Image (cartoon, rainbow, N blue to C red; front, side):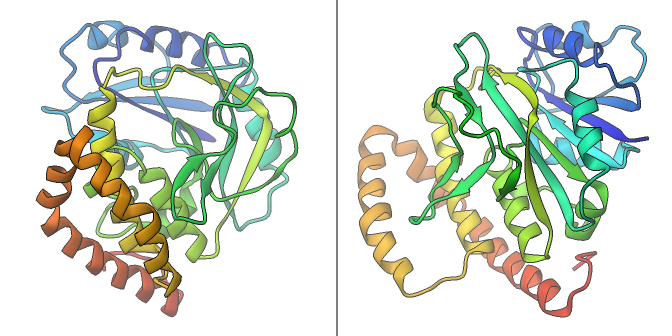
Length: 307
């Protein structure tokens, strides 16, 4: 099978019907769909638990988060390529065929593919054309909020794809797997796509952007509050830095210029973000251990199985 489309849902009844409608209308047929539901309390399951070819639904007893659920979907899937798809994304009907057409021309070391993601109900406003790491070690979606004027219409190399609609080669995922995890379970939610992209780059994998494949994203379709999302973005950024970034002397300068003022600012507007950071102290120890495992994989040039 060419593609396994994995959708992680959580109270997604407002969007998942449209997502599946456009997904099942693709002009390409060699794919399966796996829906991993995180104990939704709305009508999500009633919308997806209907007879449809290619769709398999699995339910978690509680909200396990994005990473755990996607890992479950990967374990259960059969496709040569994995498409991670948010339930608030709709695909143009040639999305999979465009990806497949380009796959046939890729070098073997290309393991991730990014696509043009536009915002739903907006006049060609860009949501993401790939992931970007800034000078101050901030993490962005390239082009986010810009008007789409064709400025990102060239195939080029990117850091990695946004996991709202990201394509990952199974061989890459198997190469990056650590103790059974592809995406890092400790991230739970947000920035896990940056983590897997950075780890893949260390292993010699590349990521390409394919502007011909277009989809549309509502963003935050599960309705999580901004402050809730800020808590995980704030904490997971430090997870990323500990695991993946080489700590050079200039990092201290960046920390003084950006991080200390941000810590001070958040202590007033969202103190729960600081509490989340403090409560993650045991997880930070785990991140240092994972960093050692990742470096060991790179140095020995071996697959990251069961380290």
